[in-house]
Length: 67
Ligand SMILES: [Zn+2]
Image (cartoon, rainbow, N blue to C red):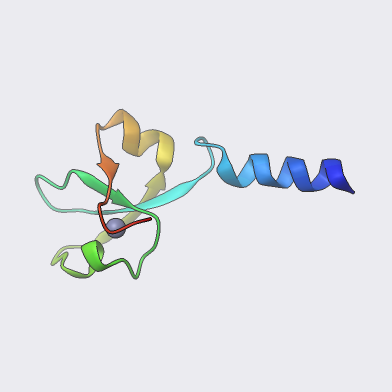
């Protein structure tokens, strides 16, 4: 049971599978963990779901509003 929990924890924290949200506007440099984030609410464009890995590859940084 414990190993299952560990595996699940690994899966949800893996950068390859973690989904983050970005504002699809020009010059958006941040990614967000939640769609209801304060930083995203100011986005006037479409919100897009991408993997954390891709966000990092594009040079995006974690939004300052996230903990
Ligand atoms: Zn955010």
